[in-house]
Amino acid sequence: MARVLEGIRVIDMTVWFQGPVAAQYLADFGAEVIKLERPQGGDQARGVRSIKSLEIGDWNQYFLVINRNKKSMAVDLKKPGGKEVVYRLVAQSDVFLSNLAPSMLDGWGLSYDKLKAIKPDIVYATNTGYGRFGDVNRPSFDSTVQAITGIMARGGEPGQPPIYLGMGSGDAYGGIMSALGILLALYQRRRTGKGQQLDASLYGAQLFLAAPALQAYLAGDESAALQQSRKQVANPLWNLYPTRGKWVFVCEPNADERFAALARALGDSGLASDARFATAADRARHNAALIEALETHTLRFETARLMEALQREGVVAGTVDNLADVIRDEQAWRNGYFMKTYCEEVQREVDVRGLPVTLSKTPGEIHTLGPQLGQDTELLMMELLGYEWDEIEALKAQGAIL
Image 1: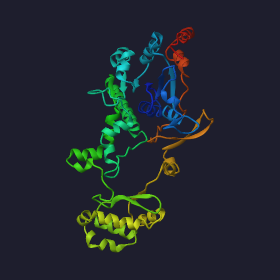
Image 2: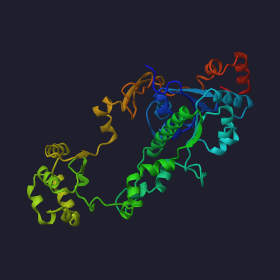
Image 3: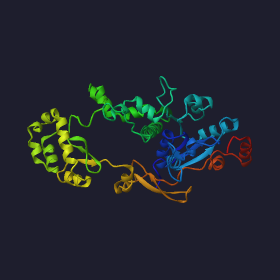
C-alpha cells in the first residue's frame, strides 16, 4: 500500500535537531527526503558522540534517529557547479526546508524569490529562532528560548531556581509545527496550484507549548505566571505527593465525593469529616494543612500499594516515572511510540523512539537510520537530475560534490 506522503519530494537543508526532526516526520510517512549537506563533514550532528561530555552509547543515535528514512546528497554551494546541482534539484522537488539563517540562504542564492523563479509552486519552509519579523538575528537554543517564554519561570519551588524542561522539548515540538505547516501548504497547493513561504520558529513553538498557563495569564490570572509551591496549591487534590518510593501525582477536582474517595484510599475516612476540610471552599482555605495531612498519609505507603489503593477507589493518579521506567512500558511499545530497527553502524537491532501519530491504513515506518554522508549523490544526479557520468566526474574533480 502506498504511504500517505509518497510522491512528495523534500529538500532537507537542516542541521542539528528542530529542522531535521521536521523532515523526519515527513520521511516516516513516505515523503522522499533528500538531506542536502556540505561535503566537509555534513550536518554537525554527525559528530555527536557525547552530550555534556557524557557518552551516549556506541552508535550516533542523535544523528541517526532524526535523519532516518532519508537520502543524502553532498554538494558544495560555494562552487558554481554545486549551486547548479541544487537548482536542478529544486526544479524536481515539492518542498525546500531549512533551519539555516535566512541571510545565509540569501547569500547562497537560495532565497524564496530565487527558488520560486525556478519552481513556482515550491513550498519554502524555514525554521527560525524567533520568527521572520522583528529581531531575527539573536542566537537561539532550546534552553534560552524556553527561558524567555515564561515556561522556565513557572517550574520549581518559589525561591528556588527555575527549572528547564530539558530534552530539547521545544526543538521537538517546533519540528512537529514545521511538519504541520508544510502539510498545510501542500494541501493549499493541491487546491490552488500555488506554493508559498512558511516559518515555524522555536519561539512560537514554545509559546504554544506554554498555552494553558499563558492563556490563563492573558485572561487575567496573574498567578499563572508564577512559581507555585506544591505545599500551597489551591486544590490539594491536584498535587504531587511522596511515598516510600516514587512521587505520585493525584489529579482530582476539589469535589466532596472525590475527597471522600481519596480519604478512603488513604485509610482515613475521618479526614473527610474534619471541619477544616468539610467543603471545597474549606479545603482551598486550609490548603496547606490538608496537603500536610495527605503527605503524612502517602509517606506511609510503598508506591505500588498506594497506587492499588487509589485505583480501588477510582482516584486518578500516576507515578512519576523516569526514562528507564518508560522504555519498559508495554503500552508505549504496542502503540509504536518505541520501535526496533537495524543499525548498520553497530550491525545489530537497536531501540529507537517511534512515531507520535498512528494511522490505521497508512502508518509511518522506519526503513533505515540516517544515511552516510553523500551516499545518494551520484544516483540522484543520474536518475533524477539527468547528469551524465562524465559531468558527475567533472563536478567531483571541482569539489562541487562528494
